[in-house]
Image (cartoon, rainbow, N blue to C red; front, top):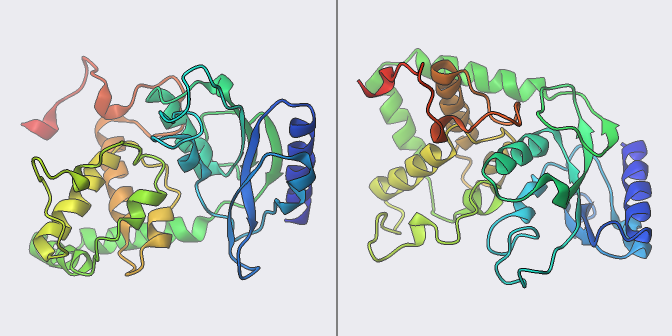
Length: 278
């Protein structure tokens, strides 16, 4: 971990000194000195703020997109281009592939300081700053939970998810941390018409969580940030993973692996069976 930290600092210092980028987005120690938080370094003298350890999980692609994103902000003059370097974990790299296929920004706008783990990623980092072990334990846990749910009856699964969604307090932390929730006006904030009522009732909670799950279908990069930030511990990554399985089974598509593949739910293939709408 210390070697990765030193690699990040060295590359960040070089890029800023050479004026190749305007900002480096990475991680720094938080207020407690333990839990890292995102940091935006724009001076070479400040690169020693940057760190990397096993607690660095934030999907920093979130800060590239949306109305305040470094690469897409509508509050910045159209002729003002911000050159960004980003510390990118494997899930972040997959998210960037998907965001590129959704035409959110150009690959040339971004320098990737990649931390890889050997899992398939459809993009090469500009600089590989470290290698880590793949988190197989979490994947195995999700698979075990999925198999357990699949073994239930339809009524039992419905009741299980109702119990989970009943805990939702509608804080929208899952939305705020997700790089694919970049809409300037979220459907949950609309009031003319109001598609989803805002009070945290079971019916409203199910509406919000299921709509968000559908919006992430075929897009989620599996970073697990929604799970991490949920204050009531709803297993949101579980439902996202299940939807990804459905997309892979129906279309053979896995987001973030192929930079040339059109998003599964935004493309038509003559060979599609369309069995899901029959």
